[in-house]
Image 1 (spheres, rainbow, N blue to C red):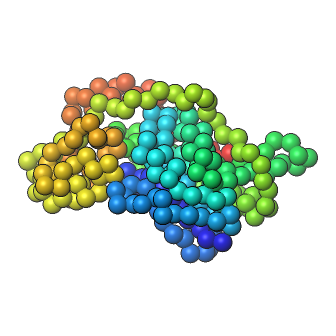
Image 2 (cartoon, rainbow, N blue to C red; image 1 turned 180 degrees about the vertical axis):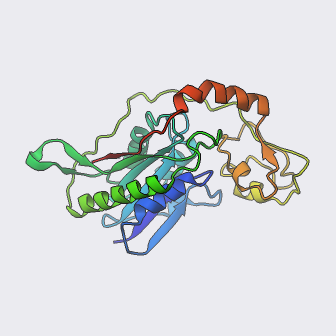
Image 3 (cartoon, helix red, strand yellow; image 1 turned 45 degrees about the vertical axis):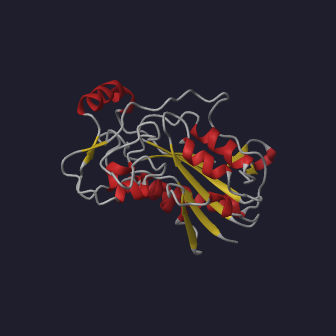
Length: 265
């Protein structure tokens, strides 16, 4: 058996959640970063004995298109997948459903163990809260210590269920057709503090930042993941303040309070 943590984590929260959930397994873990623009997903061929924790952020209640495209190019070959949706203290809507569909299409086994008496299926999926990737005050600091304790408990329970060797069709929240999502009108710009180090250009998952002119941006290719803002050593990339303020006011009600992590077992 081999253990994998596969994640698409623009600002770090999804990766952290994947690592916490993977902590229940003591074996060596290979990490696969779906953000890596040089990744060749078609080279990944798993086996039925493998366990893959697959964690993605929720972009407007959907899986980021880039993550879906790269997951579908992998060869699951019956590997067991633990589904994880990470959201910024709003909702995750159809994220788990879309993730399940993408992994099933790629040949992963989104397995579940029958409950006692052969009734409802025990599911291996979780929805966790992390700091919002655009408006950082929503879910600020999450996953925090309380989340870590809870997610570690989740991981032990997931491990137990997988070790029971149960099988069956997993059931997760969501609907078909998926909710519509057309992105957000936020495309980070570089300010005068940009030193053209090229870090953002090298790491942009869709190569929307030209390597020969990293202070610019191809707005058509940009998926507004905010990775460039998160990794800039000079904090030189920003969203338009007016647009950001308007978005904060619009989302304030939906993102207020402390949303709960959820384990689907």
